[in-house]
Image (cartoon, rainbow, N blue to C red; front, side, top):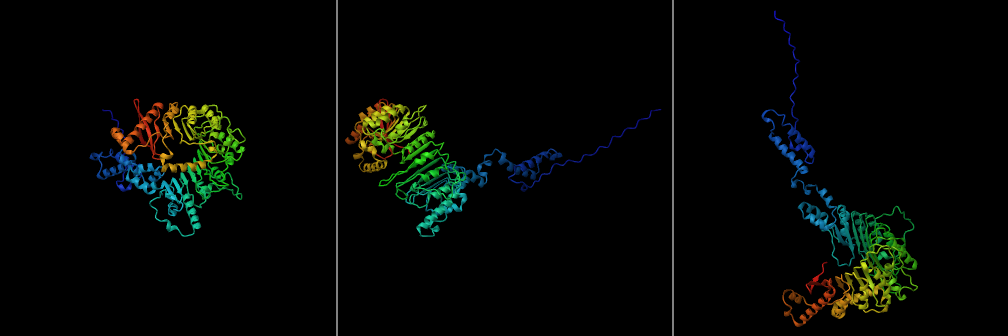
Length: 624
C-alpha cells in the first residue's frame, strides 16, 4: 500500500504592486518663471528621470511637447551656469542694476571707456552720469540748481562741483538735458532778492549732492555767505577735496555765544584730505584787518587733513595788515598732515613763534613745507638775526620726514640748523634769495652740512655769479637748478615785501613781452657759467639763464633736412654760435640736457644730445 502523500503547503498569495507612474511634469512653457533657474532645473531633472521607467518603445524618448519644454528650461538655466558669453554678459542685467554699478565709477575717462563698450551701457551712462560727474557753473545758474533739486537721482551723480566768478571767461560745464532757463526762474529785478534766491537754490542743490567729492568756490563778486555754504558742506561726508578762493573767508569772525557749541554735535568730515583757502587780488570783500578765526573754525571739522594751503594777498596802502597766525599755530593739530603751505601770514610776538615751533615739531609727518613768514622781510635789517628781532627756534628732531622746503633764507637756516637723530631726506629747496653779502653765510653754512641729499634748488633771486658758485659748493649732487633770472639787487632788496616784488615781476614780464631781447638778453659769459657749474656732475636741468640765440622756424627746418651752408650769413652766424654754446656747456656738464629757450612763454626748451664727442642742440616742446 502506497504511503500517503503529504499535502503541499500552499504559498501565501503575493500582493500585486501597483504600477509606478513617473512624476508628472507640466509641459506648458508659460508655467515656468524665467528668473527662477532652480524651478527650471528641478523640472528638467524630473523630466529626464522619468524616461527610464517608461515601457516599450517610449523608453528614453521625449514627446514633442516634452522636447519643446526641455529646450525652454535650458534657456532659463543657461544664463546662470552656461558657457556662452552672450548669455552671461553684464548688459543682460536690469537697468537699475547697471545704474547702481556705474554710480561707483567716478572718473569721466573711465565712464567714457565703459560707455563705448556697448549700446546698452552707453544708454545708461550718457543721459545720467557722464554730464554730471564734473559741473562748472556760476552762482547765477538758477536753471541748473532747480534741475538738480527736482531730479534728486541725478544730483547724487555729481562728484566735482566748481562755482566760478560771474566775470570769469572760463567755459561752463552743464548737463545738456536741463529743460528750464535762468530767465524762467527769475522773479525779481531786485539784486539783493536775486542774490538771496541764488543762495537758497544753491544750498538746496548742495543738499541733494550726497556723493560730492570735490568742491571749488571761486565766486569773488557775490554776496552769498560762505558760512551758509560751509554749513551745508559739513553734511557731505564723502567730501575729500575743498578749494575756496574768496576774500570773505578772511573777514573777522565772532562766534555766536547765544548757542554754545556742543562738541558732540559738531559734524566731522572724515574723508576730507585736501583743503586750499586763498584770497584773491580783487578788493571786493577784503578788509584791512584780516583774521583766520573763520578758517580755523572750518578746519576744526577736518581731523584727517593731509594737505593744507592757506594764502593771503597782501595789499598796499596805509593800515593794511596781514592775518595773525597765533591761534592757528596754538590750537590746530592734524596728525596725518603731510603738506602745509602758509603764505603772507604773520606772527605777532615771540610767543607766537614758540607756538609755530611747537606746531612744526608736533606734525612729524610733514613732507612738504611752504612758509612765508615776515621773518625774512622785517628782520632783515638786524643782520644775521642776532639782534632783538624774534627768530624761529625748532626743537630737536623736528620735521624728520621733510622732503620739500620753500621759505625765506632765515626760516630755512633755522630749519636746517635744527638737529635730528637721522638726516632729513630733503630733496627740494625753493624761495631762497642770495644777496651777495655776509648775510648769506649762515644759510650757506647750514646748507653745506645738510645739502648732501638736495637734488633741486629754485632761487628767488641772486646778486652775481659768485653767489651761484658758493651755492654749488654746498649742493654737489644737484640735478635741477632754477636761478630765475639775473637780478641786480642791493642790500635793501630783502626789505621789500613780496607783494611789491610780485608787482615788479609782472611789470618786468610785460616789458619783456614787448621787447624780450632788450630786457631779458642772452648771457654771453657761457664759459664762466660752464666753469661754475662743472662741479655739478649730475646736473641735468638749468633754468633761468638764456644762452642760445634766436633762430627762425624755417632755419630749424632747414637744419633738420639739409646742410647749414644754404642759410643766410646772419642765420648761419647764429647757428654756429649756438653750436659753440652747446659744445661748451655739454663738455663741462656731461649730463646737462635741458636749457631755456630764447622765447619766454613759448612752451619750448633747448635739449642737448650727444653723438660721440659732438654735442647737438634741438628745440622741443614741453608736454603739458
